[in-house]
Image (tube, rainbow, N blue to C red; front, side):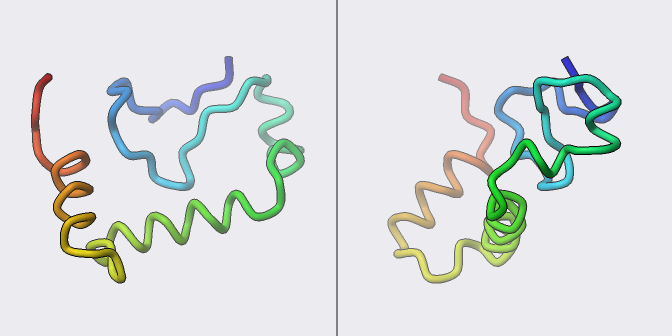
Amino acid sequence: MALRKNFPKDKFQILDPAIRWFPTDEDLRKEGYEKLLPPFVPELRERVAEWRKNNYEGASETSKALLNWWFKETTKI
């Protein structure tokens, strides 16, 4: 599997849009990573990352509270 060197080991960590796992070898990463994704996926990842940075602007207070609890609180189940 092709994992970047700085790929997080924590399966719950929110990934930066530039850090992605994909099922291929290093040669394809260098030459054709974009061909593995539908055209809108990289843009969507960037927009979601920006939305998270802006504290989920436009979401209801309930949704914001849930998103912050899921992704920012250190909770153990």
